Length: 88
Image (cartoon, rainbow, N blue to C red; front, side, top):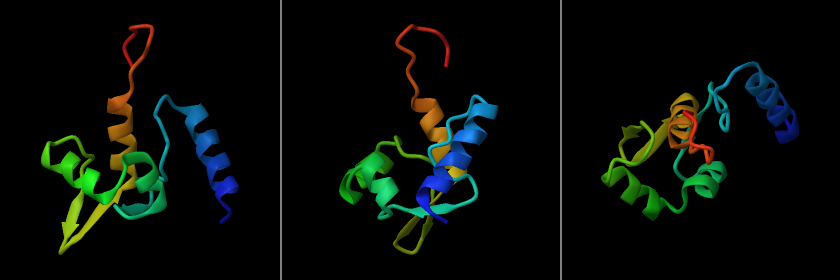
C-alpha cells in the first residue's frame, strides 16, 4: 500500500479515538526501520534509551529488537505533554 493511503487510514482511525496513532497497531517494527530511526534516533541512541528504561516495550530475538506498533503508540501517548497544563 502507498504510504499516503496508510496515513489517511490512520488519520481516520485517530479521529475516532483520543489515542495517538503514529504507527500501525498491527505491524511490528525493527530498530533499524526508517520510521523508528526518524522518531527515536540512531540505533546507538536507542540502546541508551533501553538501558535507562525510556524505550517502548520490545522483544529481543537474538540480536534483533522487535517493537509492536501498539506498544509504540502507547509509549508515544505516555510522552505527550500538553502546554496548557491539562491532563493528556
